[in-house]
Length: 384
Image (cartoon, rainbow, N blue to C red):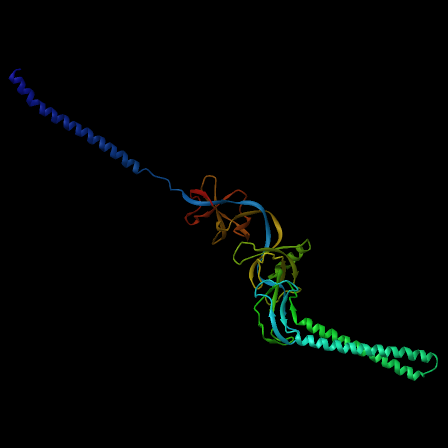
């Protein structure tokens, strides 16, 4: 190779490399600028507002019972304060406090020995008086025969007849004394007059008791069936009497502040006057209570069904909001935006509100998430 040419080639090669490097860097920088510019433009592009997540429910149309709600008090079907009818010492107690007893079962026994002795004494007296009566009657028959034959005077016969009548009266008195003594002996055995549950024993075995003492031996409550007494406003009286004429009205009872039904019964009594001090009328329902779901003295929530309301519109109560202009709900439209709808709530039925005006069957209402909503807000829904 020519030395001049070689020297010229060597001297130009580095310059070309530098020029190519500068050009490549310029191209890379331009590409980066273009990419950065497009990213900036994309980041500046406007975005729509995010959909608000809410829970919705569908308004349904169905038949709903119309009920009167009240707080009631459970009362025993009957209460017996058991007392002794004779004086004496209690020698037996044949039941446990709180355990059910049957009608006719022996609860207490009073020492019967004094009354057994009295019975034997009056029975002996009766036997004597009966014998004297028979003797007097026999004598009266003989004197009657003699009177017919004119062997005795009428006055003598009259005296004998009077003696016979007196003897008969004495014998009857003796019989009554025997009956009384037997009755007192029976009173020594104290039986349950009802099926029921005894409370605390007031007078224990070994104590002396008096007839008709102020303190009862024990108190029995009959709970099969059982009563629940409650009161409703006098404004409901006319409607109540109207539906009572159509048949027996059903009554449900359950624990306070609970939707659970403990027992179902029938309305049997409407008081004959409105309580002027409270403006209420007292009612009473009877329940079979075979499972002892109700207990005397207990407070219960009472629901008296009057009739079935046809084609009522129902939504969950949490869907109904209250604003300055009254009650309203958020309705979710087909385009997934919300609309504020004024509604008229007729009443509550359990966890649902019955809507008298403002909603139709099948419309969706918001039950959760209302705080973030306004008219026209986009939502995403989930069923409640």
